Image 1 (cartoon, rainbow, N blue to C red):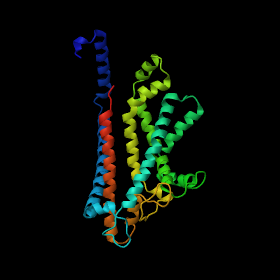
Image 2 (image 1 turned 45 degrees about the vertical axis):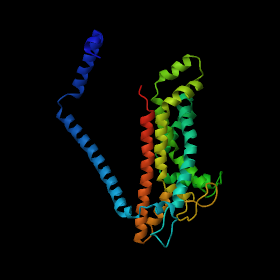
Image 3 (image 1 turned 60 degrees about the vertical axis):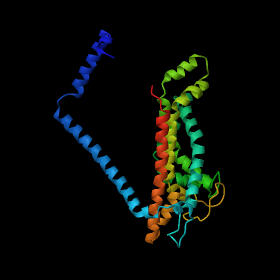
Amino acid sequence: MTSSSVPKRSRSAMDASAAATQALYGASDPGLRIRSIVFRSALLLSMTVALIAIIGIISWAVVEGGQRLSLGLLTNNPSSFRPETAGYRPAILGSFQIIAGVIALIIPLGVGAALYLEQFANKQRWYNRAIELNIQNLAGVPSIVFGILGLAFIVRGPLDMGFIAAAGSATIALLVLPTVILASREAIKAVPPSLLEGAMALGVTRWQAVWKMVLPAAAPGMLTGIILAVARAIGEAAPLLLVGAATFVTFDPNFWEGGYSALPVMIYQYAGRPQDEFHVLAAAGVLVMLGLVVVVNSVAVWLRAKYERTW
């Protein structure tokens, strides 16, 4: 849009806004410039330290465990006596079962809770405000606390599911559910209100407008939040140790009965052994888990790019 196509009154308002912004942020205040430089330097230093730590961990895993990367690492059972042929098969299958259960729980619960809180909940009701407060607080609770709750209420207590993979899946789902709800709410907020208002103006009910207009428009953001939550769930070990994930399982797990293990738990078990061969095996397991996380995050980025809409 050229300046000639803008009405005179609008051009005057734009010029006044630009002058006010320049006066506020363009002042030659030495203290302001110093604070700005210090703030940017602190941000750059924080990013550099984080990148160095990540690169260091990945480099260590590649150097230590790269020699053990093979198909047998994925297909062989674990062994306490032959680390050169030991693998992660039961742990990988257990992780897949747990993650499948997590996805089956967090999608309907997380998306449903977000839709209710954003589109249907009365913000003046005390219980709705209490729900919002608890969701925000639970997002920052340490994972070990969820493991204790899972042991008390899912493995034992009211549900009494026992030490099975389904109990571990439900515990991990509770851990990542607040993240899914918060991400889904932000995705719903990003949808222009005109879509909902226009649909309701045509005579449809609020639920039909939300289902047909708001939910499809917010789906890319919701999917990204769900997949990122799953990527976090892949690496959780502390809650699973409390809800029955055994550190050493030599058989393929069953979701509804019997013992089970998971990839981070098996890595922890190998890393705790005194022999150097098991430490190499643990480093190789770290590479396998990093590969799974990279794949999941790549899917999230692809989904975001494929279905993202601009308004």
